[in-house]
Length: 155
Image 1 (cartoon, rainbow, N blue to C red):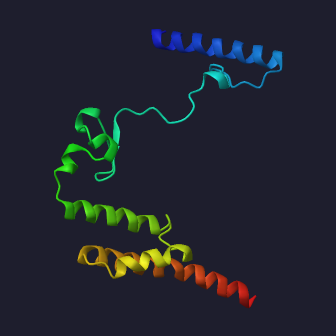
Image 2 (image 1 turned 120 degrees about the vertical axis):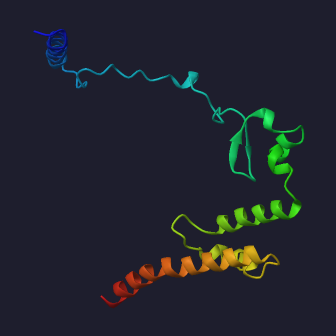
Image 3 (image 1 turned 90 degrees about the horizontal axis):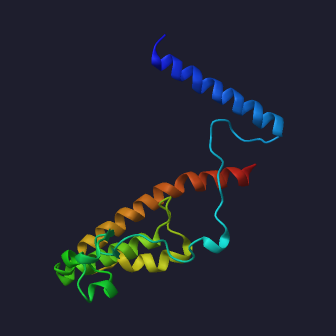
């Protein structure tokens, strides 16, 4: 008999004895798993999650503290993105504002349509093109929803 099969049989007998112990005690614990200990509320960390570094809004990444200049921490802008031109930063900010107008499903809610329409007449052609593409996606995402509501009204 190999050592592996002996070790497997020993482990199998340990699991079986643990199963019988838990059944006799009336506990509904899964066998072979260690019990989960819950941390008391007083010891849990409250507030922000502790992730290293800072968030850069322009590149949408968390970066180390060394990647930020003195003012960059407060502006949430890393050194690499701070070197970009003001036009590029304005484009990235406009893209973020556009994405805020759209839900995860690609639908533009009624309350956000007025803010979204500003981007259809934006001075930057890249922003206008992106807004038109998002509007087309909104229309295609709304078609099945409108068909469902029309079907519900008929029945």
